[in-house]
Structures are given as structure tokens and as C-alpha cells.
Length: 266
Figure 1 (spheres, rainbow, N blue to C red):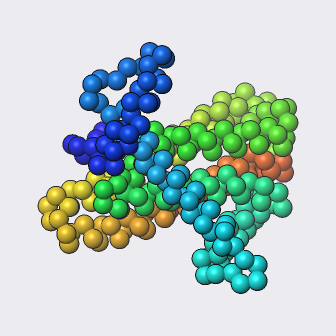
Figure 2: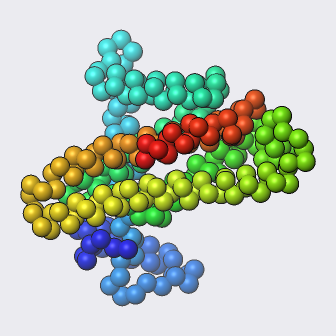
Figure 3: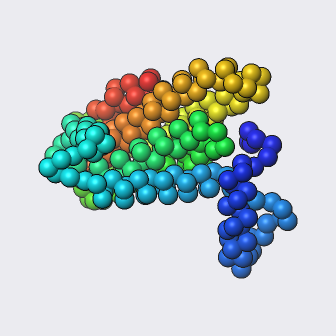
């Protein structure tokens, strides 16, 4: 579903610059684009902007890091990293810091992507289901891979078969329920984030078309809160899913109440 009748100006520029190269690269694969149609979708351009912006910012911050005289920005970043590491260690244990890179990267990407929709001339790539589905699949594959790594194949299959202390005869009943539950997490993560950001952008666009200047401002302020909250919920659910996968002494069911609480915040 497209919210705009015309492509964004920056999307037109990127397609004019890189579109012919991408089209030529995809042509041997049998992918042919209609004349005049954008080769690179708007959400791909926006994701590229997020990656470039965060990469440049990271290099700038890295060059200014100091142990003796940390700046205000460094202090804020260190506090955020420390808070996230504390959450991981609280849920998973001492090994929680091993997952900081992925969880932090996904969180900051989603936060910046959500906020992009509030900048005139840009759009939030997370208002497209393809982007949120990609984030959800990344998390889903990541926690399963580390679950297999930490518990082994048999241990991880047992993790699906029955909760701790349950009789073995419950496995044929419990196993398909767990499979459905884990598969639904991809849908839950992707659709929730997409629905919230898409709806927010659509409301702002409608308000702007009615009263161009003043009416969208309260909604844009609310959008900052929504963008931050959705990023936090995504990170929180990622940590909960990781905990259930890699913690041998815990089962997913032990964290059901935490997942429900996170979903309630959405």
C-alpha cells in the first residue's frame, strides 16, 4: 500500500544515479523493470540512509572516544549500552553480554528507522512490511541458532517437547503447540511494528493535508514516543526470546508473563 502518489525526491535521485546499474545487474537473472518504474524501492533507499547515517556517526564517535575526558555524547552512549547490557545479564545471566551486538544493532536501527518518518521528505522504512519482516526473521533465526549452539540439537528439541517436570507423554501435544508459537513470533514482531508506524505516518499525512502546519505537530510529538516505545518493545521481546532459547535452566513458559507484559505495552 502506498501512502504517497509520487516517489520521494531522494528516491528519484538514487534511482537516477544507481537504478540503471541495479537494473543491468538483475537483468541476467530475468528480472526486468517497466520503463520509468523505480528500480530501487523507497524503503530500500531509506534503509540505506539509516545504515550510512549510523555508520558515519559511529566513525565520528569512535574517533572522539576518550577514557580520561569523555564527552557528553560518549557518556550518554555508555549509559545506554550499560543499560542494555544490564537487561541482557538480568534475563540471560553473565553470558548475556555476548548478545549485545545484535540486540543493540537491531534496536538502534529500528529506533532511527521509526523516527525517519517524522523528517519532511523522508519516510520510515519500518512502515513497510518487508523491512519489519526482515528484522523479525533476523531475530528469529538468531535466537534459534544460539539456542542450538548452547543446548545442542537434542537439548534444543527437548526444549520444544515438554516443559520442565512435565510427563513425557505430553510431548506429542506440546511439540506442535511450541512450533506454532515460535512461528507466530515472526508474524507478531513484524506486523505489530509495521502497523504502529504505518498508522502513525498515515495519520500525520492526513492531518498535514487538512491543516498543513499546526495540526500534525501534536501527532508528530506522539510519534516520537511511539517510535521509541516500539523500538523498546522489539528489543525487549528479542531478549525474552533469547532467554528462552539459550538458558538451559529456564523454559519459554517461564517468561510468558514477561512477554505478555511487553505486548501489553504495545
